[in-house]
Amino acid sequence: MKLNDSSVCVFDMDGTIVDTLAFWRKAPITYLERKGITPDDEDRTFIFTHMMSESLPYLTEKYSIDETPEKAEKMLSREVLEKYRKTERLKDGCLSFLQRLKERNIPACIYTANEREFLDVIIQRFSLERFFDRAFTCTELGYHKGERAGFEHIASLYGRCIEDIVLFEDSLYAIKNARDLGMRSVAVREEHSAHVFPEIERNADIMISSYDELAGLL
Image (cartoon, helix red, strand yellow):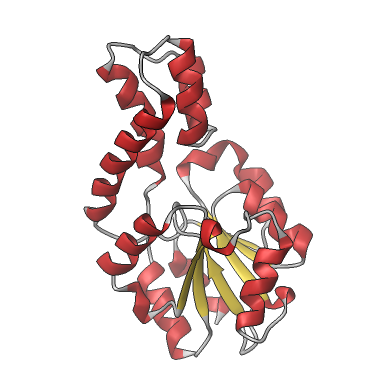
């Protein structure tokens, strides 16, 4: 696979550009421990395979915690946001790869399921506006990442079609979806997906541990 003048690179954020997924995975565990609860293996599995908005209702009901999941999520999200502000580096080789995309005039944008305040923190902390001319959230576009219309909209903004998109992602769901929609993909290894690495590799065009491995893509 090669990138060319018609390519549009669409990057996920969490787990793909920055190592921030662990913040979300650890937050519900920290929450339980503050309540004097030691999470069991079942809890940890549920937490690591679900979004925080899904795990907190499960945990508060299971342990009869006298606090609404919404209140807990709001508190933990504020704490996670502070960790975003202290994030020290991008994924290995990411910055130099983005610089090479810029030098080749290959457009790149961010498309994340996270919310705008988290996205803006990362963009500002690493001055990513140098490399990404656009940054989208699913909430703002009105589509979830499994919907073709969201990617078609992004492609149209660049005068391209969906088949011109090269998606950079870490999750199996997103990589399989890219294949089904006719997009090419680069899978970025992320620890939380280690149990499905073989399946991710089967569905992605390329799988990497470091962006330095993409020297031959340009």
